Image (cartoon, rainbow, N blue to C red; front, side):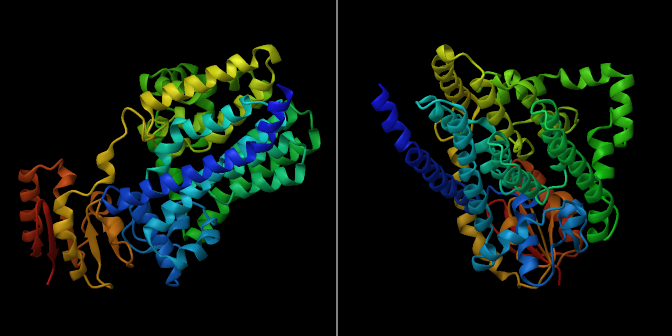
Amino acid sequence: MIEARGRLDRVEPSIVAALALTYFLLFSVLSVLRHLTYHSFGSDLGLFDQVFWNTTQGRFFESTMSLAQPQPHSYIGDHFSPIYLLLLPVYALIPRPQTLVVIQTLFLALGVWPIYLLARHKLEPGWPRLVWVAAYFLFLPLAFINLFDFHELSLAVLPLGFAIYFLELRRPWWFVLSLASTFFIKEELPLVGMAFGAYLLLGKRDLKLGLGVLAGSLAAFLALIRVIIPALGGGSYAYFASRLAFRYAELGSSPQDIMATAVRHPGRIAHLLFQAQKLKFLAGIFGPVLGLSLISGFAVVLVIPTLALLLLSNYGPQSAFTSQYSAPLIPLVIGTSILGFARLRPSIQRPVAGAVLLSSLAFAYLFGDLPFSRHFQAANFQTEPRYAAFVHNLDLIPPAASVAAENNLTPHLSHRRYIYDIEFEGTQHAEYLALDFATFGHDPTRFEDQERTVESDGYQEIAEGDGLALFHRP
C-alpha cells in the first residue's frame, strides 16, 4: 500500500498536467466553435474584442459599446482591467475574438494547479488529492464561464488560487504578489483582499500582515473607484453609481445606505437571500463539495465578499452559476473546502473524498455545461445553414464604416471604431445595419416590422437571406 501511494505521489503532477491539457484543448475547440457558429454575443465577446482591437490601433481601451455609451469612450470608465496589457501582445499576433476565448481557457485550465498544490500541501499522499483536481474541473461555474464568451473575472481564478496556496504555505511575499495581481483584473477584487486580511487576523493570528492586507485592500478599492477610474476613464465611476442603484435598489443607492439597511432592516437582507434562485445558486456552489467550506474555520470568510455581492443583488445573472460573476468563487470555495477537508479525522477522509467525487459528478451531470451534462446544448456549436449562405454579404461593409448589428452578429464585425449592439445602443444611424430575426425568437412577422422601420429611417436593403438582412444608408 505504501509503495502504491509512493508511485501515485510521483505521477500525480503528470496526471494533473494531462487533465489540464485535455481540458484546455477540448474547451478551446468548443469556445472557438461557439463563436464561429454565431452563438457568441456582442455585449460580451464583441465588446472586449473591440477594446483589444482599438488598443492595437492606437486607441487605448476605446469602446462604443461598454456602459451602453455609443460615442467613443474609455473602457476604464466601466471597469479597471489593466491585465489586458499583459494579454495584448498575444492578441496583437492573432487579432481575433477567438484569441480571447482561447486565452481565457488557458487561464481556467491553469487554475487547477494551485488547487492541486494546496491539496498536496494539506493532505497525505493518496487519491483524495486528485479528487480535488476532479472537483475543480467538474465545478459548475467553470464550464459555463468558459463557454460564455470572454470576461475579465475568469482571469482571477488562477491568482486567487495561488493566493490561498501561498498563504497556507506561509510564503507572505508570494501571497501578497498573487493577491495584489487580482486588483489589476477588476475593481471589485480588493474586496476579496479585505477578506484575506480578515482571515489572517482571525485564523492565522498574524496582526502585522493581516492589518496590512486589510488596509491595503481597502485603500486600493477606494482609490480605484474614487480616483483612478474617474481619472483614467474621463469621468465619474458611472458603473458604480448607476448599477448600484439598479442592482441593490432594495438596500439603498450607496454603500453607506446598504450598510445602514443591513443593520436597521435585517429582514430585507433575509428577503433577498431566501429566494428560490439564490438557494439553487448556493446549492450549486456548495453542494458539489458537500459544504466543506463551512468547517474550514475562519477561512470561510474568504467567500463572504463575493457571495454578498452576488446574493444581495436584484440582477438575476449575478446569482446564477451560469454567468461570469461567480468566477472568484471557483478557487475560493474549492480552496476553503480543501482546508475544511484537511480538518477531518484521517479515518473518514477517504469516504468523504469519495462522496465529494460522486457529488461533483452528479451536480455536473444534472446542472452543468460539460459535454456529458444533461443540459449540454450541442446546437450551440453548430452553424445554422442560413448563416453559411448569408455571411459573405458582410464583406460588403467597408472596414472604416460604422455598423449596428444584432447581438450575435456584432462579435463578427467588431474590428472597427464604430460598432453598436442594436439591443443596447440602438442603430445610432450607423452606415450599415446587420439584422437577424434570431433576436425576435425567429419570429418572421416581428422581423418584417423591423425591416420596415429601418427602411422608413432611410436605409436600403442590399442583401437578404433567411431571417437575415443587411441595410445601408446612402
